[in-house]
Length: 327
Image (cartoon, rainbow, N blue to C red; front, side):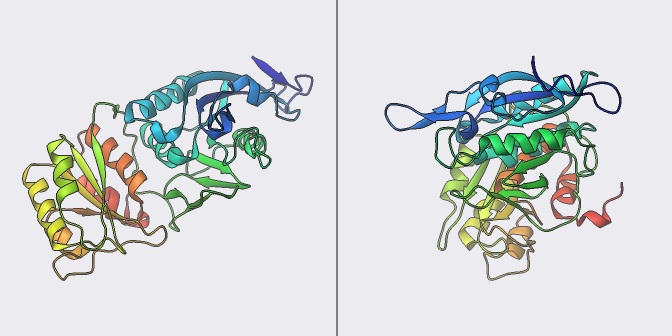
C-alpha cells in the first residue's frame, strides 16, 4: 500500500483509503524504441507522481490494455474489480485509470451494474507519460481529490481535463486536447435500478451508416450472431430505406435494434419519414436512443439484454425523458 502524507489525519481521526484500479490506457503508456506508445507503467509508478495528500492508496493491476482493444469481457472484468472494492468496508472510494477511447463505455457499465453509493471516479490521459504535454498526473490528482468527496447524485463520475462529469450521456469529443470529454445536455438518467448480470457472454454490435448505405453491415452482424445491434445513424437518427428493411429482418429474428447518431450533441427524435428516416426505423421495430451516443447505447443495450429486460423496458430506458421516470 502506498501512503501519502500519513501524518495528516482527517476530521474523523482516520485517513481515508482509496482503491486505485489500473487498466492500461494512455495514462500508463510510454513510447518504445519503435516510437509507438503502449501501456508500460504500473499503478505504483503513476501514484508516485501525486502530490502529498491525506489519503492511503491501494493500487491494483486489473488490465494493461489500450481501451480501443477492450472486449465486453474486459469491461466486465473491470466492473467486477470495482464491485470487489465497493464491498470492502475499509474503502472510501475508487479511482479507475482507463484509456480514453472507451472510457465512457466502461464507466457507464459500472454505473448500470452497481449504482455505487461510494465515489467511483474514472480518469486517464490524452498524452503519454513521456509526452511533453503529459496530462496523466494532473488528471489522477483531480480524480483522487474527487474520490475523497461525498458521492455525487449522478453516481460514477469522470475527472478529466479540469472537469468532473457524470457518466450518463458522456462522450469523447476531441483526440488532441487535454479537455477531452463532454456530456449531452440532459438531467438525470432513465435507468433507476441496478442491472447486475454480466455482459461478457453477449455480442452487441455497432453498425455505422452513411448516405446511400445499404443493409449489408447489419446483415453481417446478424450472421455473426449479434443479440443486439446499435445503428450509428445520421442526423437525428436517420438512414436509408435499405437499412430500414434490414432492421425489419433483424426484428423478425428477435434481435433488438437501437438507433443512435454519429452527431455528438443534442437530443435525438424519430421524426423523419421518406422511407429511411427515424420514423420509418421506429415503425420497423427499432428503438430510438433519445440521448446516448453509439458507444454508451451499446453498453446499455448489452446490460439490459443480459438482465432479461423486456422490449418495453428497453424502449423506456432509451426513449423516456428522465423527469417522467418514476424513482
